[in-house]
Length: 157
Image 1 (tube, rainbow, N blue to C red):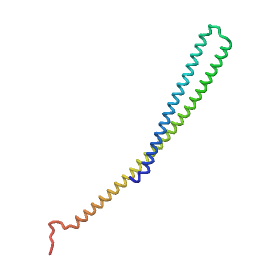
Image 2 (cartoon, helix red, strand yellow; image 1 turned 180 degrees about the horizontal axis):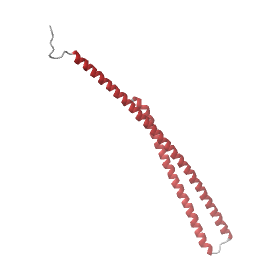
Image 3 (cartoon, helix red, strand yellow; image 1 turned 135 degrees about the vertical axis):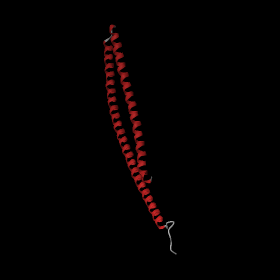
């Protein structure tokens, strides 16, 4: 097992790194959901404000209030555009996190394959060693059996 220690250590570190990247990807996904929720709130607020504004059109409204309403809606639209940009940025972060996680998975898979190959090689060496020992034992047993006088042989003394 001493020959496998370095590979096992590398697998342990790769597993920890992969798990950290997976947690980071989950965090980015939560950020993306939150950004989408914020965008939906902004869009909902803009729609509600437009609906209220249209409903109040029956009343007489001063030019100053109309001007403030347009400025407010412009700012709300700017906030929506900014939030859309935030979502695009978070999507890029998520894509990068997924790529990094996939690379970590490939690395871990490769290390596991190396471990499997090395274990198989060690097993082959062990089997050859055991076979050699059995062959030597059989050869020694055969030599002993030949060296022993057969029972029932006549000896001239």
